[in-house]
Image (tube, rainbow, N blue to C red; front, top):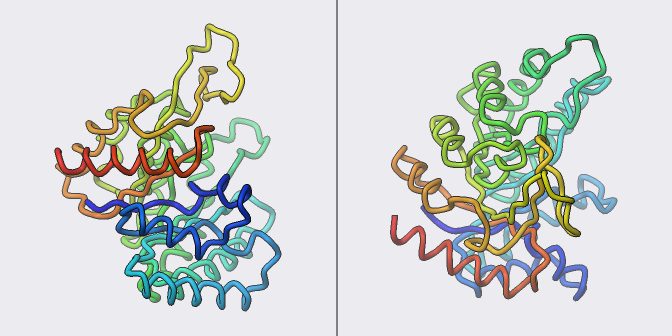
Length: 286
């Protein structure tokens, strides 16, 4: 497996220093990462043509410094009034992924369930599946694989994401396995990875500090589905069993990139550097 980093990890540095994504690419390469992934590029009012130009420029820049672009991550909500239009929007994101040269497009599927009587995540999976398959089919023609992350509470626990995988049932659609996010659903990360391993197209690593829901939520922490408390931290400083999870992925045959997502309050660049060192050492030892 190879190391990569999400541009999202540098968000605090970018806001504090006015740095752009081109600078972030250089920092990632200097740290030693073997790849980088980007989150949606047009959230700041870019038109599609402007976004395509930015994607092309980023691809040229990354090629010049020898840093592959390994994934492109965007939001999506197929439980909306017009899911067909949402699918068309995500197809444009697939176009951007192709311009970036990213082999993987990660898209969300929903953020909340409709307030319908007895409407469950199973119903949601059935309703969304045709639109997710439509996007996967379109992206396959571009040479881009699509996937959904265990992210966002509704489809975050391993059994729910597996239900989504089985319902969509398309060869170009898989799972972005985020080993830390399982804690947001109060699932054991290592056990969850054993469920995810057969569907994985891409992987994220992050770490969290944990506090029981029996104590008052500390400042800077957020809540899990079960009422416990988490706070992002440097990889290796928290409770996520990183080595165990990555060993399971490796033994399952996964040989792709593992992207760091840093979400903690620690100094941005120092934390990313320390997280990279931990990740590199862990991968070398499993």
